[in-house]
Amino acid sequence: MGPGLLAGLSDDDPAGITTYSVLGADHGYRLLWIIPASTILLIQYHLMAVRIGAATGKGFVAAIRDYWGKHWGYFAAVGLVFANFGTICAEYAGVSAALGLINVHPWLSSPVAAMIISTVVVFGSFHRVERVLLAISATLTLYIVNGVLASPNWGDVLHYSVIPHLPNNHLGWIALAATLGTTLAPWGLAFT
Image (cartoon, rainbow, N blue to C red; front, side, top):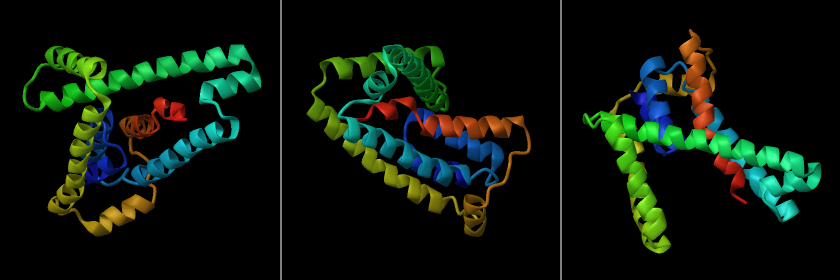
């Protein structure tokens, strides 16, 4: 339980929380090293997007289009649309998994979440939504409290956080790929 709680520190969306919880619950501390590694990669990933924007004055797709031509620009745009669609599906799967813990059926939770999010995006004021999201994000400090209350073996946490251990089976490899995929979300390239 400790690794899943500690893992959530690097990403806080439904897909990330679900993925990190599964990583910790199914693999214990063994694969904990992927969390600091993916966090470092996340920082580099966003810095790359920002540097492309700063150097070119353009976003990721526009920079590709200008450097390699419009066909590669279209290819990059279509790739980002599909990758982001996958990310959105993962987010709703995370919402469904969370609400499934209180016996809300996924066929109900996902459409209701989609309607609420769409309503807020279309009709909500940016500043009000921003304040609500900032208040919600303040609760993320509870990860630290939960991590301490879980009473993990801190020696094991440190050991498995810095010394990589390979997965024992194919599910471990899937968990590693899912962790990297949810942390390095494709929309991060568009933040310029």
